[in-house]
Length: 116
Image 1 (cartoon, one colour):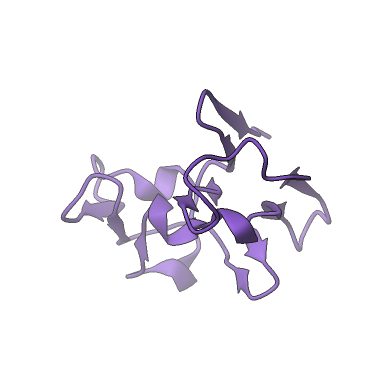
Image 2 (spheres, rainbow, N blue to C red; image 1 turned 90 degrees about the vertical axis):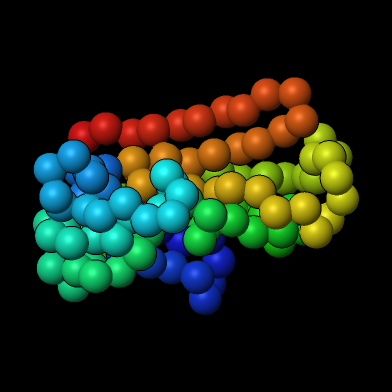
C-alpha cells in the first residue's frame, strides 16, 4: 500500500487481523491488533490499525495499492479539495487492509474493495 513516496508498507491480509482464531491479538481499541501469526512472517509482532494510514487533507492527492509480484495497482486520485470539510489539516483515512481504498467527503463515504 502506498499513500506517499515515503509512506509505503507491505500490508497484512484481512485474515491476518482475525482475533477469533489467535492469528491476531486485540489491543486497547477495536481497530488495532497485534499480528501474532500472519501469512507474511516479516509482519509478526507488528501492530496494525487503519489510523496508521491517515493523512492531512492537503497532502491527500493520491493513494492506493501496489504489487511487486503481479505488477498491478489501483489508485484513488483526488484532483481537487473543494468537496472536503474542516480545512487542510483535517486527518482522513486513506487505504487500509482489505485491500480497501477510501474517499471521504462530508456527505458520503465511497469504499472500494478489490477481491482477487
